[in-house]
Length: 392
Image 1 (cartoon, helix red, strand yellow):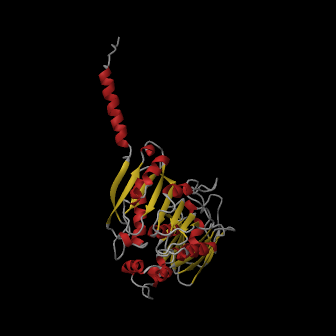
Image 2 (cartoon, helix red, strand yellow):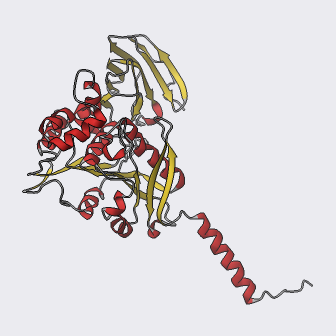
Image 3 (cartoon, one colour):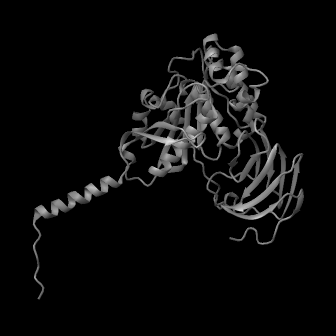
């Protein structure tokens, strides 16, 4: 016979304690967390602050709010503006990177491309280290943060569920002509005065340049009507530009008789605007994000947009690509693009195409891929695609 060994209550308690300790160690740290990351743009070490509500621990996934800080702000802006209590109540995580500029610090980065990558890199850090619901990555910013927020929505429409941008600078040249002298001076330290030599840099920092991209992501704008630091015409200009492509772009939320510096719309109002948005495809499409069979994209750097990858042919010039997957054909019209790629893993399941046409003034390489695998490559202007392309 086997003897039954009695276990003391103290031993049971000790085992439970160590199991609980091990489980707790496996959970992401709650509260405010500082971290550093290496910029994917220039290799510099950058700083950011995240906030993890206790209510987010143990969940499968949680939404992530990305805060783009305003001029003179920093990585503590989300805390200073009161985002933590609101996200505590909702179980949402927050990340706020310290932006960096080209010629100045992050306090006056003015939507510099390096600052854009600060946001992307901090999001990637959160996705690696925490359980992020990638269908609910929300972007928010006011003033210079609104400038960056609208620009990021335009350049990464497949990443964000929605962006809320307030009091933003959306046409940088126009703003420098209408703002107060001290702000113009701060901006020109970062961007230099407007000239033919700086024209492209001013345009690449302006969301109006990418208005066609903003038909593919919800953008909620707000502005005070007596704002003299960033005149309300900036929101009017961007709204009108987007409506040339998307009749559903809503009017900005106007706060009548409100100036620039008071709090205006508070954090609760901003987060309430986001709660219903999700970056998800239609049932049966089986794509990782929203899906559009037609894309009309402007970009200043090589990157992908949904299923479409674009490589500009020249630096300091925008690539503009119109790609259409409808009617059993792929058609591409390109300006200043050296390469265009189609990722079938991001194309909806019901969509197929058997032929292609390309219109481009300069030589252009067309590639069809499935993830990292190249299935077809050509520099022809038209032709048939190989059989079995859509078979996995």
